[in-house]
Length: 66
Image (cartoon, rainbow, N blue to C red; front, side, top):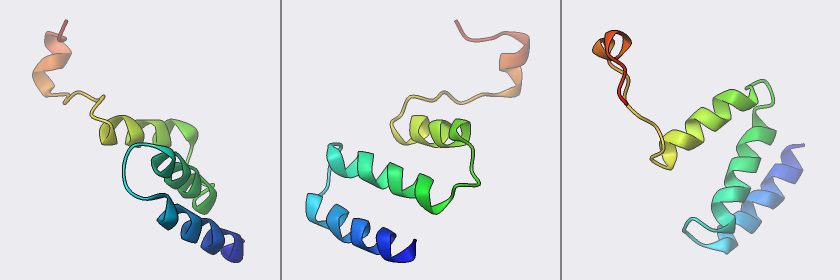
């Protein structure tokens, strides 16, 4: 498994920076490297990375943002 991850990491390095294929492959690698982490957790991480998350404060529970 480690050999496969090393090969894929080298390929990712060749893809360059940005939001294109490299981000997709890096996210796939994280899932392969950490199969014990649930898909919901990965989705939450990616929402934060992409700026699609909101900050939840205590006052939101009484008055949720619209």
